[in-house]
Amino acid sequence: MTNYESNTPHIITFPNGVPGFEHCRQFELTQVERDLPFYDLQETEGEITLLLTNPFLLFPDYKLDLSSEVLQEVQATNAEDVYIFTIITMGETLAQSTVNLLAPIIINMNQKCGKQHILHQSSYISKQPFPVELPHGGVK
Image (cartoon, rainbow, N blue to C red; front, side, top):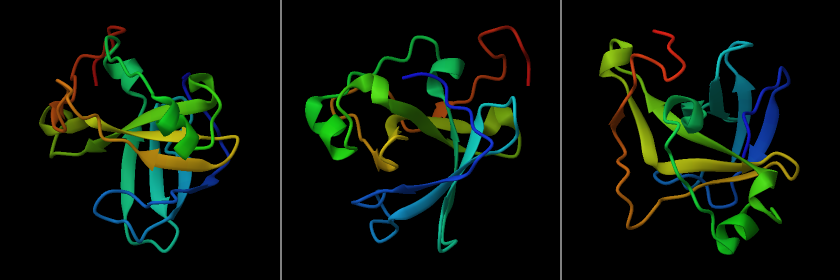
């Protein structure tokens, strides 16, 4: 589970869609800007676009154990085959924005297969305040 960087858009299939948009199954993943850890996940029909980030960069203590069932759903053989993203809900400012740590997006880039995985029985929340001061000391 490393940081994903790519200048090339990729079409990712979500066999079960994403919660609330189960009928949306094909998404294009694009890095918003090189050198920034933000990505657009846009449904190919243009119905929805989700802003994603790498949660481990913003929340270094974020822990995620993926079961073999979750890995199978994205056609991965082990956790090193997948990238983990979280959805950002933008507010008027970064201080008013939130990150969904409760339901990460899991993507196997080798198989171009993804899912949104809801962490049941977790202390994480879906509206975690966005850290205005980044862990590495940068301020946004």
